[in-house]
Image (cartoon, rainbow, N blue to C red; front, side):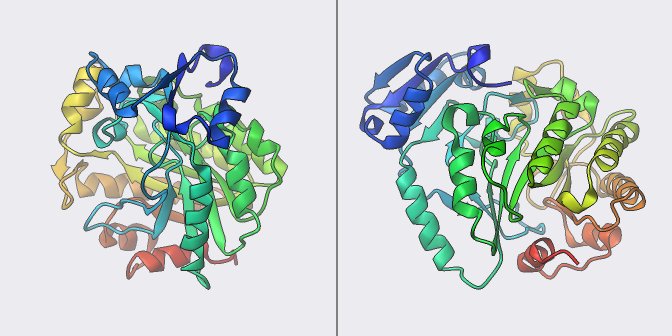
Amino acid sequence: MTGKNNHFPKKIFIERNSINFPFTKKILENNSDVPTEVIENAQNLVEEIKSLRDPWGEGKKYILLTTQRGEFVKPCPCTPHYIGCNYFIINLDINCPMDCTYCILQQYLTNPVITVYVNKEDLWNQLDVFLSNRRNRFIRIGTGELGDSLAIDPITENSKDLISYFRKKLDILFELKTKSINIENVLETPPAENIIIAWSLNSEKIAQEEEIGAPSVDERINAAKRVISRGYRVAFHFDPIILYPGWEKGYLQVLKCVLESIDPARIAWISLGTLRFHPSLKPIIRERFPLTKIIYGEFISGKDGKLRYFKSIRLEIYKKIVDYIRSNKGKKIRIYFCMENKEIWEKILKRKPTGNEDIEKYLSSPLG
């Protein structure tokens, strides 16, 4: 999907103070056929792109190499008033070349350009300190929150370094979350049980109509099968689940394909979450994707201020999906909800989470 064969990126911009980093040199050497331009200030480029008619679409055509001035590792920005899972995220790059209509990053990020932070030595130092301060406890950490973990991996090869760093840290569960099928670097890297390669899945209809530039659902599942054959475990995220006429048939068909073609013992977890978005995202989606219908359903304002489906509808969606998983080879698969309340957990999964650490323990404990 992405890489050198479809004219992505059109150009790589390098902020001048980032030229001499080893990671910068590696990227430029490995992508010598891509035009480059050295710029004095990344913010000037960002402002120029933001002045265009569709800055988000234009920004996805380019890569900016710069330095991370702050923290690489942060807690996942779980929404207030809903159950989180003590997940930590690594932001080594932001944004991706795919263009999903519902993508929250359109509203969340202030920089529309695909950005790669090249001061990777600082990442390793920060990770060493972060993990040292959290010894003697399981940690779930991963990439793919502010960008896709593998979409630009043919360019950065970040997956190799990240897997190599985490694969011997057996008290850490490390996850690469993606919609991409760029798995060649993963397949070339020795696996470990604590490394999870996770795919975001949707019904085929939603994937075709709303996940622009993303591989098909079948391609993603086939990629998951390949990394399993290499020795990795996988996970799947059905998020956002989007309501439409025939949604049940569409989502259960994808689950049928997953559960019939993949050994449930190699599935670390499945997460579920329904469509939700801040009201300020609605006009952005309307402007950029005038044909989409996903923002015109019936929504309520949740405790976090985000628009989401009525609770009764969410309960119906979750019950049908969870019942299907449990009755079709997935009885022991760990299922969790993304940004839902205790009532949803109790009614559907019969669990009474006491807080984030309880969910973390549920997802991190050894299989039994």
